[in-house]
Image (tube, rainbow, N blue to C red):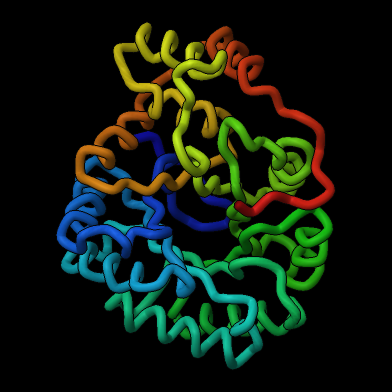
Length: 279
């Protein structure tokens, strides 16, 4: 599994990680087995959030006895993101995850509390060793500018955003801003929602042809396209150990410039939206 620097974090992180949104809807032993198989295959970046129902409990069970292998990320809800609320929310997440620390802690999306307050909470947690770094999620360029000013230069590790082949809005401005400021981009929902790709569509056929030439799967090709830039990571969810293995296989694929160009053409960027998409 390829690993890359993760902003200011003094640790290289796998380009393909594991998301956990809705993982608590699955059969608990199956979900735990999927996460553990992902760890075995090098997907040691696990992302969760207090908003994700019982996902933190599932993750806590999956990483039991293996905590030091994992780059563990969780998120605070904007409604909890006051100074004291951020600290309390993190401590609650730590208890559910059965750990004493997070490798990165994120503000889930911009909210009503001043960013200065949220980031002061983050810094208190960092000083106590309860988090090792912090970042944001679902931040558009104006939000990122405000966060940069509020948090200080070089402190924000990442921006986690919606990014898949049929939703490439971040490429207009968010991704360039992050690259310019040394902030990594983490793509959530990298397969979108529903059936992806449509095998009868032009894009689906292109992915299938490229996958066949590499003796691999369409899902792996799609994931590899999303991490083609050195600043991007992705966190697909897996519903089974078999799906986890499929996702992990994307970490070893090398796509040619011609193949990347074909995918780029088959899934056009489209116009820049007024608001950054979240779903």
